[in-house]
Length: 98
Image (cartoon, rainbow, N blue to C red; front, side, top):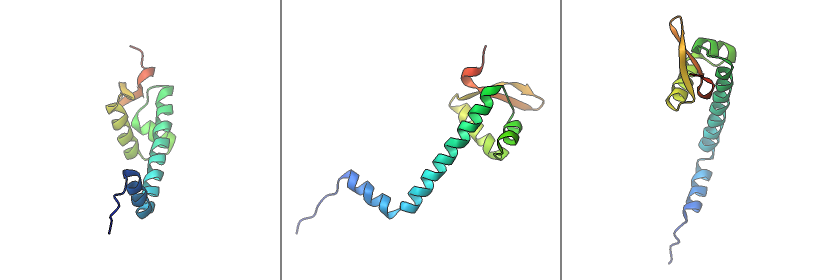
């Protein structure tokens, strides 16, 4: 009796087939997140804005906007560009002029 060792590609195909629903849901979530990030980037490109302004304009809940802004700030996609009352203003990183 011989046993065949599966290649990495074959193992991945098997796993994808076994977990097709989870893979599909993960792909949908990534697509949704990318769309939200693109909307927010376009919004912050116009001029510096606050998280509540972004939430109101895009229809994305404020907690999700804050989460995305924190991640985009971490990776230097957006930067703080001043204050508006108690809220920091955020702008697209390459749009800020020193």
